[in-house]
View 1: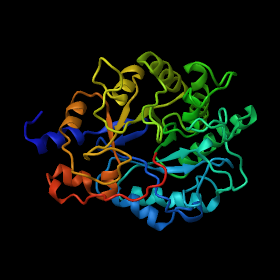
View 2: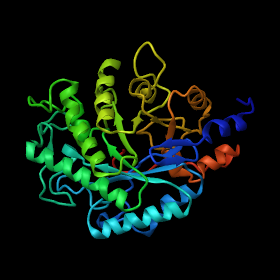
View 3: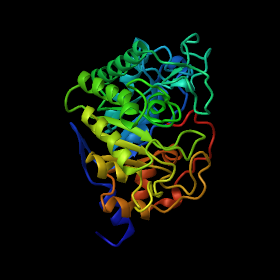
View 4: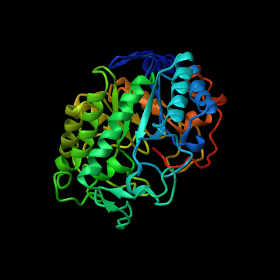
Length: 369
């Protein structure tokens, strides 16, 4: 590898990567970030241009903000985009077309909020607040336990959305399984107190997620990429653990990989943090090692502070990121807040124009994912 920092960054980041039918031109991904800029759940021309600007600036893969699946209890806002209904899907098709015209590749992230929902909120105000056990992240019993019929209906809704993504011209799909939303509520013992086949040990708690992945895989072409996003941490529960040991993580990832997941998008607040004692590997590094599947790392890349601190702080050196990618600890890196602040983040980094980066000064993003 070259010793010149700019040449090294280019050599490491600008390498093609294959994921299913996709060939990505580089290793940089736009992380999904909720914006609530889709009134009535319909992404408009401004949303298409928002993503197209980042595609035109060279980002290898764009993963959209979370978009609600077609289930009554999935959402919590009238301004978060839907992935159902003729008007919303026409808007999403236009987004995919705009990104492709700009030379990019794009996947929608499919989302159900579970007990994060507030009853009375749109898009379906009278829809119930449901989860694996009706328990919210704060431990309160503020929802109700999902029936088997409701579990089946959510699985079907995810599969329908995945099929729609392929039919609408997207390049793959990501299932949101992190940050304390519905799928993650099943994975986390704190919110999953079920005593049936969907609860108990890590195998039971993974069953719902694996069924969703399998149903999505069955609904799309065999080479249509499916990414699964996971996190240990939850919003306001930053020390939470789904898997306390590498052995538990291996079981969970193995079940998801067997179900048809092609890649694991591993959310951490800082990519530098080791996941388990005795190893410097971060969560994405462990995911790749244990599953043999491609892994995407994310967590304050290019920034000196971590979520939920929403100001940019100082622009951080990416030397450690390059070290880890040079060792193939993980395959791809997702960039979030830095790309909100500057759509040309990658181009400027590769050109050594760090002093020209436009900072992201903060503000409300809505729910992070």
